[in-house]
Length: 136
Ligand SMILES: [Zn+2]
Image (cartoon, rainbow, N blue to C red):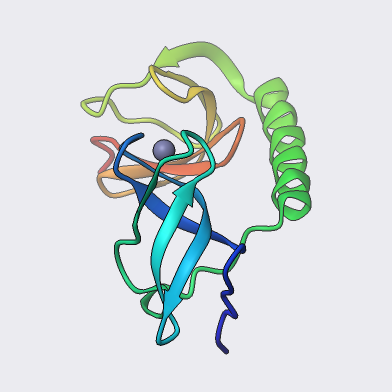
């Protein structure tokens, strides 16, 4: 499966000006490789870094990810409702039990789904994450 890339098409590239990986327009292709791109964010034109063939990144369909986000959020809301309180601040030095409600600095409220040795899986509003804990 080859991604057909043509001039004028979109490509994810590292923008040397924005210093971020952003969507670019393809401006020039040599021997099937993108050589020149234009940043959609800042409009700067620069060389394309990396070969597109080496990264067969499947384009994410926004509709699919939006759907899975909604269902994760619904799951999360139910889990938070049924979790036993109080909210425990997340700390990797602590150990948690399945059903515990925890509050993470970055990810916010989460509910512990499963515990493992040294970690536990926690359902956050957007997705499930593995967190380091001192579970034994
Ligand atoms: Zn840019």
